[in-house]
Image (cartoon, rainbow, N blue to C red; front, side, top):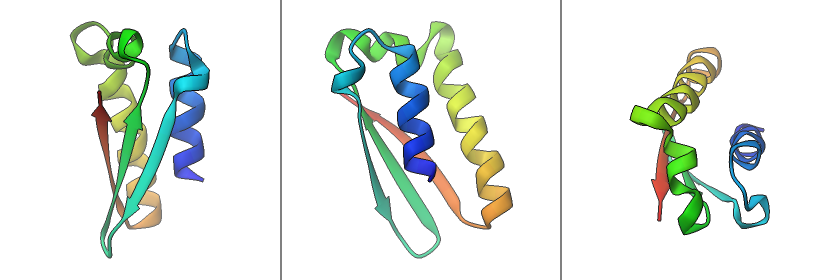
Length: 77
């Protein structure tokens, strides 16, 4: 569910939605969401001053509180 949400958000922000890939690496207390996009779309995911990336991380914080499990976002290039 969380992986799919991040994927939908990322696809809405980029020019190449078919190149969006989100992989969830689950641990006992934390899940890392690895987000990959086309090289030319990395700036769109990060946003001006990191605004988009911070907004996505804030969504993950809210989900973390509700589920009792920490989620971390890594934007890979």
